[in-house]
Image (tube, rainbow over all chains, first blue to last red; front, side):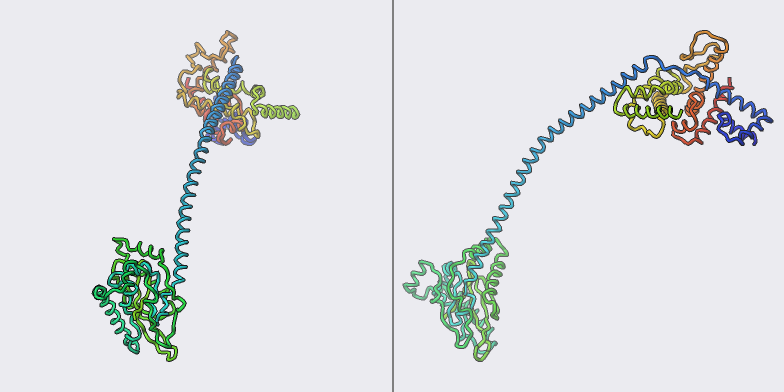
Length: 350
Length: 194
């Protein structure tokens, strides 16, 4: 072992921390190397000097001092615990109020939610009732069915409609002036359908233009005077003229009774005609067209034209295809349907 | 012997159990066997009696409060010395003391030995010489640096075994060996300067 390695191991050699073979090597080297021997002696001396430093006794009074210090610490800990308990209690007291307020807030919220739900339910119920009523009224109207191909124009909720008809159109009696194209106006074959439609349209237009003149020119009968004074729903019999050609299929005879005014439909229609509603015309027309479609379900028909003749009166030109029972020939007949205040009716004119 | 050690160990465990429950008497009994040595460790670290007592008191309070953290698989006194060494290091860092400054182990060249702990009563020359030498070596100890001083206090002054030092300082035994070797070399150099 060389001097460098020996010097590195001397501390362990002094502390007897080496293996036996290492100890022998070091002692062998120390026997021949004075430098390493002196080094070893110096290290041993300082180590021994430190080991002989006397142990100082613990000063008197330390035990008492420590005991007092430990008790102080325990008192501090107890005080902290009490503080924590106080805080806990204070927090608990505050949170006791919080639950009450939370409950109150919760109750208010639940009440508001309940009221909101009640309003919603009430609204839905109202809509439902109106809808049911409308369906009932609608299902009992038979005006759509052109059973009056014999000339009997059906009235649909025409009370208000008849009463509100413009002078140009007059009352139910004056409905005679509104000539729905009947078979006499229709040429055989479909070709005349359009001509008849045009003619019908012209007739209607002419009638509108001439309505006032006609109304003014014709001498009113007593009955007419009375009806003018007291607006009455157009009488079915006044408007109905049986123009159904023999052999034609009579459809929808069941729906023959005049129906009372459909208040809900009138209201709905009126709501659509609020001043300033730019889309109200379209909505109104769509409404009447829908009514037409429902009423003429099963028929082949064509709405050739429709127009708004006044603020609340609409007229629809409808071609209905009928089938001859015997010859099975198809014939198109033209009809006028009127819409007013939600009511829709057809009138035939002799 | 074995049964004696076994009884001592059993007693220690019982004292630990009671002390963990807050029993001050059991705690005092528990620390009675190691408090003297613990004080000397602190004294050699701090080189000042008052600071040493403060460090010791702080250490024992920590031990009392955190007794539940004691891992009973190791020796209790070793755990105590570890806490004492850490407390001393903490105090030294806080006070930012210079290891060379104001040491009671000041050596003035042999005329006086200012060591408070040494009995100043006159005695045989050998004893006086030993006292002077002790004062001198302790003075040299103050000059080796904190890290070297630490290992020399534990190994050469307090006589802890390498494995005990390894546990106290929480480092491998091989590191302890190299630390001791370097520390003694340094102390020797300082010692031989004068």
